[in-house]
Image 1: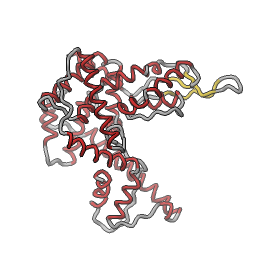
Image 2: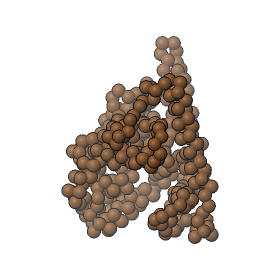
Image 3: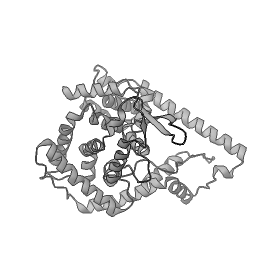
Image 4: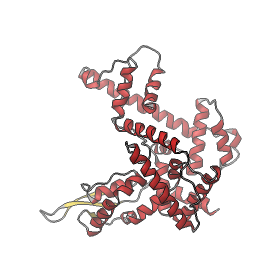
Length: 360
């Protein structure tokens, strides 16, 4: 229960004997692997992904990567699988595990609905307002933090300079803000704003990276994955740790989205209906590959989902959505219509800088 215990440890830092008002999400974030709570299913998915990643990379890079030994420390992988399943269970029942842990620590837990309605409502508002204020202050502090003097003379922050910042053990709040800003500047290569910090907190980098290699950076993907695979194999004397190897490979996810023809939804102003033939074909292909989608993208697809719902879930992996137009059509045959509106979030500028970096 390491992740849920972190919550209790954070709460315990307030030493005063005062009431603590908290809000806990029912579900946690950050499952491990494909999110499975079965150790057999989790380890099997890792093995299948590793073999597929090696085969796909060998074919795309026109090189033989079969020399890589993926059976590295099976006993450690077994232990990893057990721990990962515990974390996945906790994330699916996050609130329950957090509250159970607080009770075990001796806290008296009172649900907000059990308190006086007027008082409880005011407390909830105050907690939300305080939380938003603190988070907003943190975002602004990171964005306006000064670049450390050691790298102030350069517009670009090298990997070595950033590593030096990260390896500094004892840091003041100002130094932590400086490090975070340096990391974001190096990652996105644009001005660091409070909005960018918040987006990064929500996992924007992973989404943008997938979108970039699915489109503008597609020709550089094989080289990127090959370099990472060779680096891991060299560091491990031809042995790799499956979870890290799979996490670092993107070719399989991109090929999967290409096979599903996800980019067909990114044509502006084209109206999309669930009854369209192309949408029905898309759903059939997605349902047919639902286990592969779950394994590589950690997205659950079922026959019950509409074609639009499936498209929205997959587009969310690159932080895009279809916009609702309305219910159109003749009386008795009206159905929901959607269309794609290009995102005005600055990603085009980021992609341009990433492309320039690839071309250097």
